[in-house]
Amino acid sequence: KRVRKSDRMLRRIAPAAMAAAAKRACGSRRGKKTGSWIACGTVVTLCAAFGSAQSSSAVEGEVLHELPIDKLKWKRKVDGANRKPVVLVACGSFNPPTLMHLRMFEVAKDALTKRGWDVVGGYVSPVNDSYEKKTLIPSKHRIEMCKLAAENSDMIMVDEWEAKQPAYVTTIRVLERLDEALNKGKAAQEPKTRVLFLCGADVIDTMAIPGVWADRDIEKIFSKEHGIVCITREEANIPELLEATPLLKRVGKDIIVVDEPVPNQISSSRLRAEVAQGHSIKYLTPDSVIQYIGRQKLYKREVDRA
Image 1: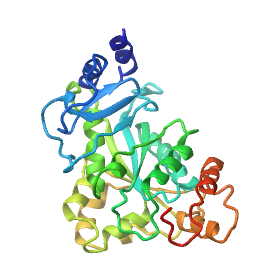
Image 2: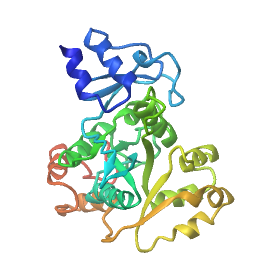
Image 3: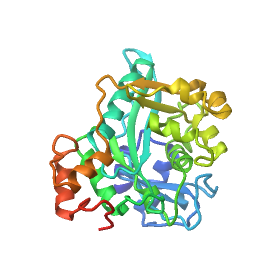
Image 4: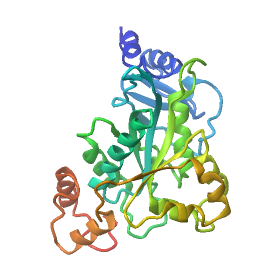
């Protein structure tokens, strides 16, 4: 009975994942760390039941963690037209998450829907604690704030895998892991769910700085296997950024640039500064996040490791 229930709940994801749900329902809670997938109920967990092949996104000493899938919705057809399924993934500090982080998903969804895509869901992936940034608070707080921020969203979920790893994880590994979760085991005739990297213009700017990103990672992120949706503000000049280096000029022709129709200057750093000065941050981030910051006494100092 439990197996049949899991099968119904996971009918829209890879057939191999549904088969893995049966294995877990029969008592297999955890397998070898081989970078494959097991599914049950509303989560997908990285483990051995999905097959024996090593995932290209596997990391040394990988920590297994569940991927939420409860908000994923495949429409296939809208207004009678076949649509290409896509999942949006935003990687970053989320220190703290703001309304603009959430807003990016809505702006991207509107733009992609007009282009013929079916946006089936979205993920925020908080960066690992090993990321070298002095103002970064522990991931346990950032994960919880992201969950609170996304709780009223019908599409945004929190992927904790990156933050839970024993060391820093590159963006391309996060994208590859999600790609495997959503697509491995699908029949050839089933449309692949494309995993797109969602970001702001500031991220494209860092790609032009030598040594910040590996060239091979930039090539993979911009490739047709993935791709980038960039939400810009008024002052951003994406064509100029793409001309900054030969690599970006070569790979950046397919970037999807979307102008924020209601631009503003909300940012995590400005929220932290306001909290440090004892000022209100209401209407800049969800109330539940504000309450969490207050309870945990976060951002009271410029560098807060609470």
